[in-house]
Length: 293
Image (cartoon, rainbow, N blue to C red; front, side, top):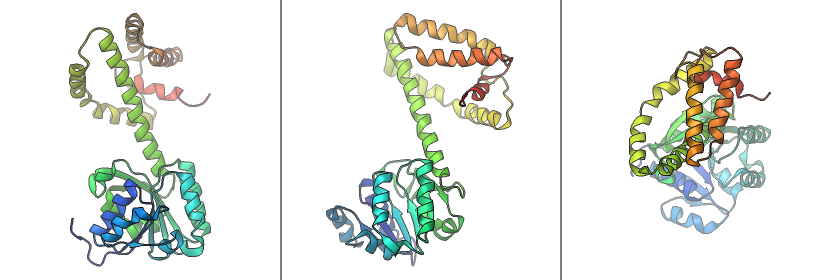
């Protein structure tokens, strides 16, 4: 990759695991003078050979650039490293790309403010080889001034999108997207179990289902709008009709010896919603029952 940013600004990267190293190398390739630091100094050697400056301490690395990108194992590691940088962070913009909760992001923002630094929190939705391409999504949130100052640089890392001034917003986006994946995939494994229990070809079924899933995006956007508006049209048909179908799905699973807890939970929500007088509404109306009692 060749440099694409003439006179690109200086950047520091703290943490040189697979993702941190990919971030640092991308900045180098795009023409940014890059300082790197890692607890295990040997991990900096390949980047130093490529032109990066390897700092002896985290504080030294932070002092070297106005933009400091942190990518470590977890929030505890971030706290430990930041505690070691002292006053070097003052006047800098700290961008934390470490996985963590919205609460952790807001706490780190408070720490940055107390130490005179701007703060952006970001989350990496993709693998190290995709850094620098549109195949990785990176939600970012926090200081609007920090974003305005470094948007161009940060967008060199991939599909970066700003989610507003709340430092926790990027983590909300990340956690929700990842949770959706797990919810979908555990459901997929359940139906594969059902297909196999009935003697079906799970590989062939998977191919057919992949085609069916392509029809879901319009439904997802419609359901999200229904939730936003508080108006729940019969998206999959009236709940009173869907509830009858759920009985068939539960019976099928139990007859085939496949776990049915999730289906029973959905049926329970449907029954409760119907009992409350919403039997003509759609599946999206179950949203109203998902908060804490």
